[in-house]
Length: 135
Image (tube, rainbow, N blue to C red):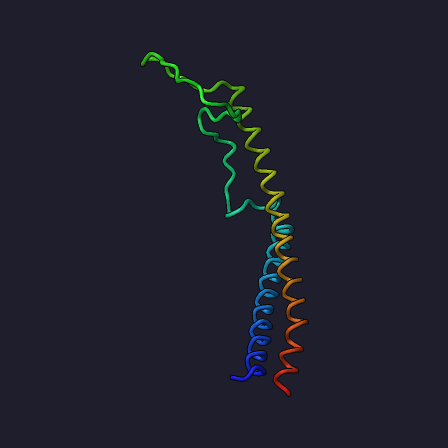
């Protein structure tokens, strides 16, 4: 194979890959548009379902270091207090909202980035591929 043939193949492969990037960017843009306009709140990642109404028993949003286990009598059952349940619920809702915002930013960032990179690569490589194939 000559250098001209290899260059032509290279430019066409990069052009095809850039078209794929453009398609992915358009898909991301449509996905972002639909998620923004058709849902009351931007959806959670991976179709996550809100479970803040039913927190796990004892789920307290406080990070603590390692602590020695306390030995309790066998007949004692520990349940979270109303304040602990309320704190856990507020913490869960706050985290969900932060995740919604982050997901929205990631979606728009990916849509714009894929589209722009695809367009730039296509505009650089496709004319070169056409030029190489005509000579």
